[in-house]
Image 1 (cartoon, rainbow, N blue to C red):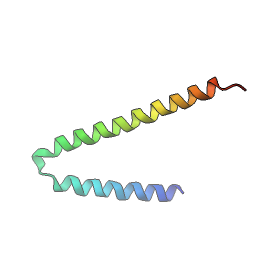
Image 2: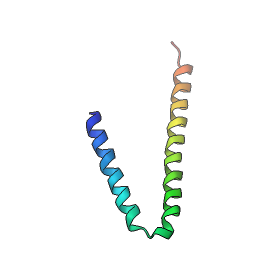
Image 3: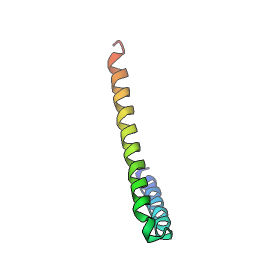
Length: 62
């Protein structure tokens, strides 16, 4: 299971690297900033979802 996920992540990483190589060098900082913002947004969403799940589980009657 994890091996398939890792393979997919590697393929996605290679795709991103190919896209980055196709962008003119003067525009690469913009692409990097956009990618970082997207990743930070995904991390924040995961943290918020985790907190919401923990909060909901805590409020459930035993």
